[in-house]
Length: 430
Image 1 (cartoon, rainbow, N blue to C red):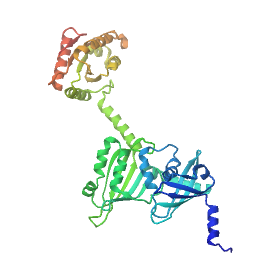
Image 2: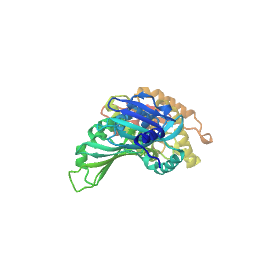
Image 3: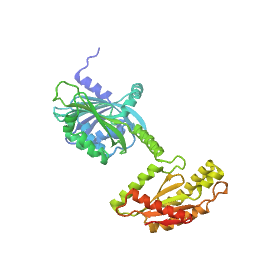
Image 4: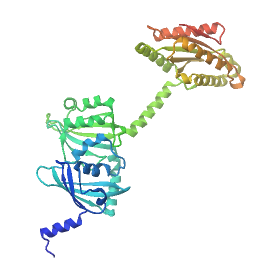
């Protein structure tokens, strides 16, 4: 067997590895000692260490999109190594994925200067790992971020940004500093809740040993899009009441959350809509009336109400049957909805053949010509079996001191006057 001297082994290693880099984190610089293969395309002879870290762990990962600036707070952290470190990353170079193993050795005790050794793995090694990755894919896509927290020492460690690397990073950061860095990634309306629920004093007070707490909020992903996540704190179970160590995780719940929102929206619509005419039901339009009055009291923007009643509708049911009557009701509503659409009124079925419109941005004088146009439109329309119908309309506007009951009594009285005064007419009750 040949004798391998230190010099011979050094030469052999230098020959076998694909790239060697000397990095200086403190002075933000690196120099390339050797590069071959794919590293010819991505490594400069010299450059910024921060740019190197960004290139290896961010931009050239198997995600082609550039990450948003908020995630750049992780760059100096990922570039810190307290000891020997090994990682595997997938580099996207010219639309082809290359799996690379990175081995890092600190040059001195300051852990500010490093030797990087980079090797591209062969296809068989890549395929074997890819198969394993697929098995873990679901879990890794679910949990975007994790770390351990020691509140007594005010330190976060074993930080793992799953979107950037499959391996935890061997650096630590003050927990209080981390909160201030991460808050900009939280949806502005959720930032107050985030700061409250991640506050060290809040966690100490509200989370007992062995228990977990969580809350949902929106947070930026790598591409800068806000997604729904669940933030989870789990306190370590120990017998020491003064031991405040936690596992913190960010779980991606966006898809399930959006499905839940869609489901809730459908149920809300079902609960708010009249099943026959597909407009607001009595309860929902009643709520709209109350909201309109509150809005008027807050900003004094004009708002009026219009009540419509189909004239002699009982005769339609008696002569043609209720199925035809239902068709006429639906056709009548369509005529009204099409006419008021440009005005953005809210319409609901008050009951039977009575309907109420909440008319935002209009006083009763503004509303009168609109109501007259609607009355004529109904009068001119032709329905099933050449049926012709008309409607009586009552109008009123909101005044200071009005309640929902006062408004309803006034508009109902106006509509009643239109009915008793000959029908197919409009009465305003100011």
